[in-house]
Image 1 (cartoon, rainbow, N blue to C red):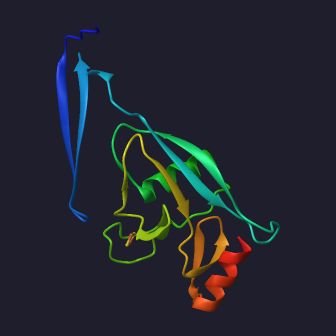
Image 2 (image 1 turned 180 degrees about the horizontal axis):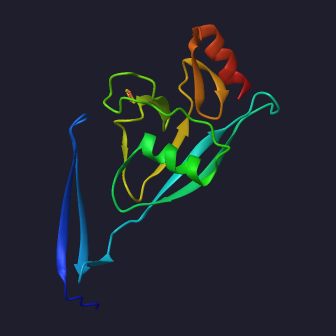
Amino acid sequence: MLVLSGCMTVKRILNPLCRKTTISIGIERGGVTLFSPATNIIAKVFRFDPSNEKEGYLQSFTIKTSEPLSVMTILAKIHDLDPTFACRTSTCFKGQCGSCLIRVNGKNVLGCVELVHPGEEVILEPHSNFRIIRDVAVDFSQPLSTHQKNDEEKDQ
Ligand code: FES
């Protein structure tokens, strides 16, 4: 049995946009965190360059964190790790402009308000209603018809 003398910290993280609250528990001693239950998010991101690839694939990245991160933050961290990764950088981060639309675990969502927690694994793909420019970046000026979406899903 391991006994640690220190103080237990409880952080309450509230995302006001989606009203999700997360409790993060750790043990600290002298300002140093000795225990944190999970420290990684595994993100499997869609990679595809239509100019020289026939089909896309998923590439796995490990993001170190002990706190929940928005999908947009995860995409920015992946871009820092691999500058060839294409994604949109958005401006509002308030769930209002819609420029962060992305598919997370098969569901189309706003990336700025969707939180991923330490210990979770997510699949990040381009929004399914728009043509892919590269990786998870899509062309919002060209929405796909239902017929086109079905054809593209068959091709992948
Ligand atoms: S950044 Fe504007 S809705 Fe997400």
